[in-house]
Image (cartoon, rainbow over all chains, first blue to last red; front, side, top):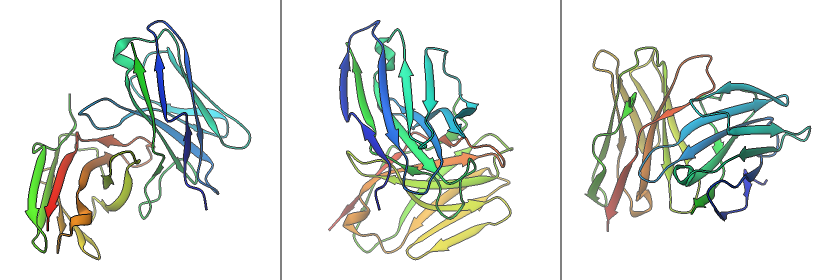
Length: 116
Length: 112
């Protein structure tokens, strides 16, 4: 049973460029959340997708956008990259938007984005 | 403004002893709390959660205690094992919200 898979694992981009990160949720899950983890910090909520719509959004600018496909996989897009966008981007999945207290969210291993 | 705080960045304990990881929060609206463990190059793994209507939840070697009046929770690991060495994150959530608010994490090292 595959867990949450994210691609790519590492990425280097130049300031001003655009990037797309991908996530496939755990089998049986239909909800995808994205988190940004800067060095030395805890993960910060970016947004969540359910039924192909953005349900909730954290304090991130519009440069961060996403999409969910009918097969529940998701993409995170970041435009006009800044040096400060360098971070580990984590995808988390669950069955239905509100996490189960017995299981929490299931996280992927993340995509390490470096902006130079 | 950090709503969830893990004030100690690291903890080192001997195998077999108790590990106590602390977490404080400022938002009184939080009513669910979770602990995650993270190994290098892996995503966070869910450990245990507690609802604000309880003051203790136990799962095997892991016990979480919640003190609502002090806005404080702690994770106890007994006995600690070398495989428990990881970064531990405390997270909180408001009922009905999908968003988790994480602390900065604490690195636990369990020495054989």
